[in-house]
Length: 146
Ligand SMILES: [Zn+2]
Ligand SMILES: [Zn+2]
Image (tube, rainbow, N blue to C red):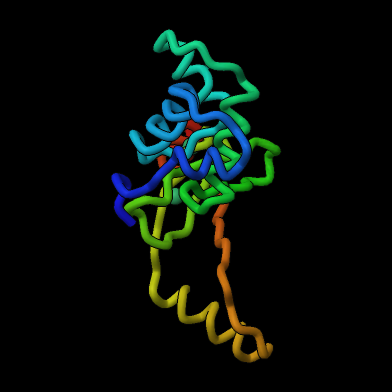
């Protein structure tokens, strides 16, 4: 998918909303980083850049981007969804540090194949999967030692 070809204007209109520079700023902000961020962080980054945007607009716009498959929503079980831009990033899974919240990405062909064969053994055809590993990252393990 080519980001230049995505017509955010059409998507926003489709949702019965007005296309604004604020909504566009949310999309740009999500595209600008590889991090997995929550809506609050995106809100504060935009506010910090003197963009006059409401929390509600940030949340609503992200919701639409998720709905149209432009942004991936990660549920880490802590009630704070993280978001990442899907453009240019293929399928990957996540390692999550439960102490500092660091998130690393991984792809492992064996894991992918194993999941497919588990599905097949149970007569499922997979549409997608979410694979998350929780633990302590290297930094946090070292801190525990002190
Ligand atoms: Zn950590
Ligand atoms: Zn990711």
